[in-house]
Image 1 (cartoon, helix red, strand yellow):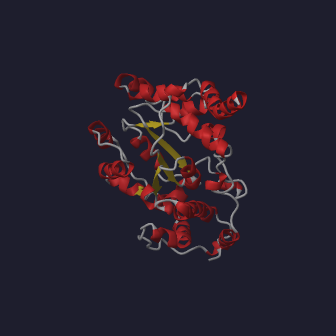
Image 2 (cartoon, rainbow, N blue to C red; image 1 turned 90 degrees about the horizontal axis):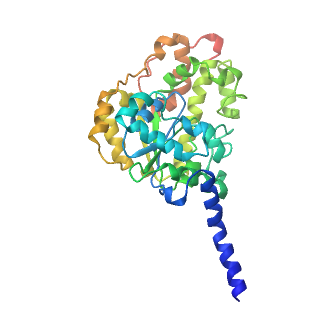
Image 3 (cartoon, one colour; image 1 turned 30 degrees about the vertical axis):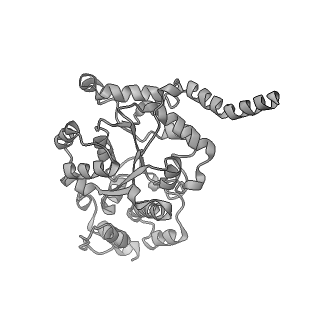
Length: 337
């Protein structure tokens, strides 16, 4: 009986031993870890203004965010913790602030949640394995401190809301929304957009038969394709939201409102995220120079290109409150509409 009892004890403690081994491999002990509660996760399409918002919210004294050190040293979460704490020091921040910035850190994610950075479709709850859930939580916990005890994460493109909510069941999601015409124009004017190689090579997955037919109807216009990328990602967020997410766990923030009313917007965010008010945070928000570029698309695109986006995105633009759909021009015959 004693031998059988000992065998059961060894089996029961084996998972704990594995966890200890994982933590030691990351340079931490269980005593170094703070449990994760109500992580704050920013989602949005690419080029939606989420970086501006992310860097602003990262100034709050209670949040812990991912820096470039996470990509360079994905198994050393304590180093990221030390870097974020160092940057928050007024003296050290003068020297390190430009070098240590909040980021999405997809190399870090791929190390612990395989395939996270470039899935061919949105990641959902059923994509989370028991092993990945344990790994992700284990690598984030050592980053937190008693003071900086709220994890701040940002992802763009596919929202991955179901996937992340399966790992962090009490996560608070903040959806940054920007005029899809401005997003499409921005995609067309950066050197890293992969839409130029076609949907078979970009990060938004293969086009559905419906979206493929829509693209063909615009003579495979790259302007239309950039608009479709925004539409695909926005509809993925709506699908994830409706699937199983408690409405109380998601807040929508318009980029344009952030730019015009940064302090009021950030106060609304703090209330939603259950973060305490901070006079120093508000001073930094007030001092931040935020300039909206959401109307630049009218200067960057021809009237015909603007008309393509007005036509293609009309339903989704209206859904998100972008009612200024004055026709910029007629769609050129070359795009067949």
